[in-house]
Image (spheres, rainbow, N blue to C red):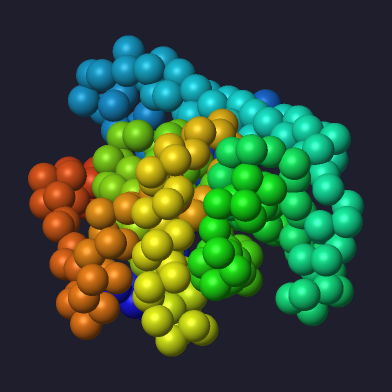
Length: 282
């Protein structure tokens, strides 16, 4: 797996989703403001359905557009709500002394690390604009210094790559545009690739996979981290099998298993939309 594959998946997902979102947004604006939006895919769909006697489906298309946009707004709002609530919770249990020591140890002037008093082993990267790494005292007591450094290096990769924001965007696309099924696969595959790349970065920093592997096994033995209802990058709750396989054999490339049925269906739906757009331009 490579950074190029990750970027390809990310930008292809945004291209597919962005094309659909922009058309739907223009359509809603035309309804609310009475604009005459030329070259709109949904308007072409309406005209086409009327031409073949399926004008009753016009209302179903309206419902689909409105549902997709409203669900997108709800999804974005819920993300910010849960993230804000967790931020307040973190501030209550923040260990200021350990937090300052961690930031000084890793030379972080931006205060990228937050240490919270919690017996559970936690290591996550959260935040869309300025991502921060949250580590629990339970994790610090569980791991050795070298293992902790490996986990921190893993999370630093997620922070520098702004993975919480990218994961959120892909999950938004996959959940709101479910009629393009390949987007869900893109979302899952991106998470796998980024976890492997973060492991690769940590291994390259320490020049060994021993510390990272032992840290992962310790956290799995204690128990998987609880899933949180917002986008974040976590150390021990994603793609464990792929990551163990990579640690055992770093030279072996994990092959993609492309779901051809979903890919073909998604391509057919997207091409159909493009055909409507070309027809509108004609």
